[in-house]
Structures are given as C-alpha cells and as structure tokens.
Image (cartoon, rainbow, N blue to C red; front, top):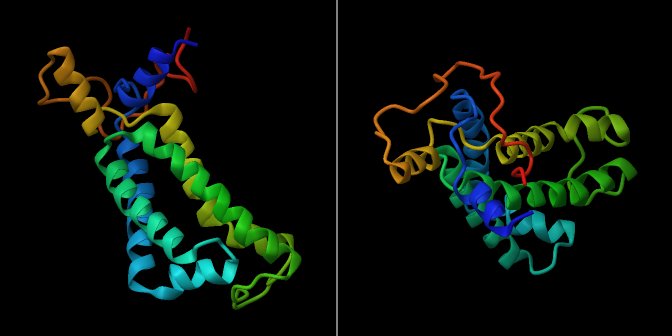
Length: 189
C-alpha cells in the first residue's frame, strides 16, 4: 500500500458515504463531547473513576481523555478529520471495555455494581457494555465509510477540487446509498 494513498484516505476522504452519516456523526460525537465535559464537571467521572480503576497517572490521564473527547466529539459532529479522530476513539473504547468490564464479569470491579440484577457475570457485562459497544461500532463505521457529503471534510474536498460548496454531491440527508464507492476499509492499491 502506498503511504500517500493512506494519508489521502485518512485526511482527504471522498463524500461517497450516504448523507445520513450525519446522524451517526452527531450521535457518537455528541456522546463523546458531553462525556468529556462530565470528566471535568464531576470528579467521580474523571480523576476519581480513573483512580478507582488503577489507571496510571489518573489526573493527567483523565484530563487527556476529557480533552480528547471534547475536541474529538466536536470534530466528529462537524465532520472534520473524521477518519483520523476515529482511530483514537476506537483505542479509547477498547481500553474502557477492558478496564471496566472484565472486573465486572469477575465480580471484582472497584466501581459500584449495577443497581439491579444482573450485577456480575456475562449478563451484567452484556447489559453494561451497550453504550461502549454502540460508540465503538459507530466510530468503526465512520472510519470505514468516511464522514459523508454533509461534513467539513467533504466541503474542503469540493473546494480543493474546484466544485461549488453550496450543495453536497450525491446522497441527500436521509438517502441510503447503495453505490460502490471504493472506500472500503483501506484504499485500493
């Protein structure tokens, strides 16, 4: 694979994803944005939680993750650097799942148990992992599909190509595109 093609795929996506991708970007970006703010507003969601979980340098790590979630959430909502910011969010969600759900499964979680059964074991994990699962699947979708035509990434691509920026090409806001766009998981060689 050509390094230049990978850079282009990450930083200069086409607008071939459906316009309805905007809905996914707003959902996942909004959740990351407000969860980042919560880490600053409520200590038990930031430093306190990271301390209980045994995460190294909980103050610095909570601050870093909060800033990542706020800035990255806004980037996703606006559709700017969508594929690039999806990568650290996939990593963050994997870390979140590993640091919180394994101990919940084993019944050794330093965090409060869920308020109602199931409180430990596989069913508890499956119940508690639902938002983590939705977030990781959403950012994986955005990584693969790209930001869609209603994004700053697409607007910048149209400006670079000399196309009018007034109306995105391709799909309308709620149209589901079935055309092949060649985006795939990685650029074609």
